[in-house]
Amino acid sequence: MTKIEKVIFTGYTHTVLNQDPKAQKGDYGVVDIKLSAVGGESHEFIGAVTHPTAEQFFAGAWSSCYLAALVLAASLKKVSLPSDFSVDIQVDVGQTGPGWFLGAKFTVRIPGMAQDLAEQLVHDAHEICPYSKAVKGNIEVAVNVVTK
Image (cartoon, rainbow, N blue to C red; front, side, top):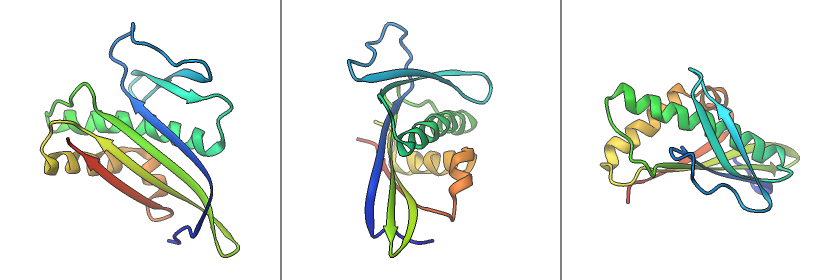
């Protein structure tokens, strides 16, 4: 797997599970998108920048799938996730020499959970998520788990 030496484009997402249909939606310049996951559950993706780039679309699709996988991983371990858990994904397109590559950085926030349990859930979610499985070994993926 090749590391990116020079980042050319970046797409960011911040994904939360909206559990309140009355919650404030995106402001001017953002789009709220309802996405569905395996099992037919509906998830709201709030705050996508208008005219998103391919990197943002990929990060958005991956984050929606990964969020659903994290919920499933927690349910399989019979663990409750806090209502304010979130997933931030940064997808970079860049170059190393003449080649072009993808890279990703995850920040998964699970406030109040023990660090070792949170890290295990994050790992398990990557094993469940089809996007994570598709890129495994093909692109560099850095993961930061925050429990505070």
